[in-house]
View 1 (cartoon, rainbow, N blue to C red):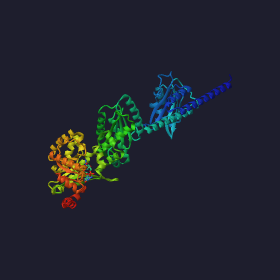
View 2 (view 1 turned 135 degrees about the vertical axis):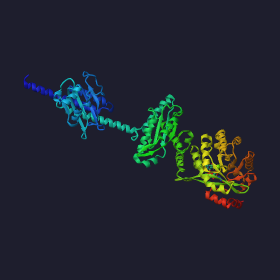
View 3 (view 1 turned 60 degrees about the horizontal axis):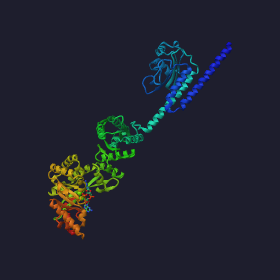
View 4 (view 1 turned 90 degrees about the vertical axis):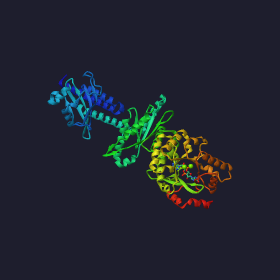
Length: 634
Ligand code: C2E
Ligand code: MG
Ligand code: MG
């Protein structure tokens, strides 16, 4: 072959090689761009291998640079790698066969230049040569990629076998491929981030409602098959709005972040902690042991009550927690969360900073009830509650013997509410106790001058029997009585028989204890005869007064001899048990007369007076109004 022919052949070969290289680049680029995100890592490793192989290298790496790191090149990481089988221990795509991290001179050049092309080490300055020699690299090609004038990473090929005369187009080709790899990785990261954002709360990084729902569905299905218990704790931060107003928006966010961290601390890795939104969080205990939910609720109350520093302010926050569980029911996630929500509102209504287990009676209330219950818990602080007094009149003398305190709620949007509108649902939660104690305190204060002007004046206050069924409430009641400052022998607590009868034994034990702790305190059975027909309990309970229900009074004065006979029987029964008898709902003079004839001591009702304010009752007592009205009507 002539020299001319030889040159042509070499040129043709070079051209063919260039074309083949271009084809390879096109092929690799296409597969990198088209692959699924989960296939990308494998695809990059494969591309590095084919590239290295084509160019005669025995190792190839993709390095990425994150500007977040410290140092001249931020944080540099070899994210993908290939190593020829015959060039030492095989790299599996995670190991770094080049180990360029500790090559400061080279990296400096990488930061400044367009690329590094080393055919043989002899051409290099001492320090750089030594850096490569130490890694067994004799030849190297490094193609950097920049984005927005910042280095983003590079692909580097190396050979430990000897010098490689890198083709002219190799550096450009490598740079193209590096750019494609880095863009694809960015895209993959973006997809991961978007995916995370769709299922996680960006502020706390906790699972959001969507993911919680998903996890709950799966866990419920698993548990149903295995017959295990799943528990949901839903917590809402008490008065978060105040904290938020105090701290400002950014401070409020920090507070939520800290709350999330504390919840993670008290839970185990297998528990789900999610943020529903706002200041509501949910914890799911899959396969919960007996007592675990309560222990968890206590741990949360305890941990969250530790003071927190936010923006230089010390904050103490508390949650209200509702707990529901899946045992025995085919519940869907939404129902489970709704039950926990109902229980959480019950905890709020019962005074906040506590937990309540869901029970089906809580669900009897409508949504309107729920929000009312919550509003009622705020009503005391907002000064929306007030008391009216209805006089109790001694029938023989027609003088005021005492008065019953009756609560009213001036609702901000619904106007004046009567006890029937809210006492019922307050009674289904512990809120009723707070309410009754408030009434006791207020009524005692307002009645002070009546005690002074009339040494026999008795104040009646309604008390939910719920307090009597729970022994630990008794101490609080005793304290409330003492704190009210009322002369205790002038206080009569009215208990409705319906509630009292739920557990007569317990109630009677507690009433005895109460009488012992507060000597002179009186008890009345309210609405007597309206509920339970069994009279047996009358013997068991240490009561002083029977308040006959108004249905019996209503029959008096009508031509109804049986009605009169029943009233007579009730009054006689009361007297036989040495109880005072008060007739409720006296609406006419005739009824008042009949009751007096039958030996009933006192009456209460619209005939004498409807419930009135403190000022009105004071005026009534002073002007002996009752007597005048009674006489004029008779
Ligand atoms: P109660 O203790 O039997 O109180 C008497 C109720 O009968 C009062 O209704 C009173 O306004 C009404 N009343 C009085 N005279 C007449 C009358 O001549 N005819 C008729 N038809 N009604 C009359 P109010 O104030 O609506 O209270 C209803 C119930 O709510 C009370 O019945 C009591 O059980 C409960 N309640 C009221 N205040 C409180 C409270 O502070 N705590 C608790 N736990 N319950 C309360
Ligand atoms: Mg009453
Ligand atoms: Mg009554």
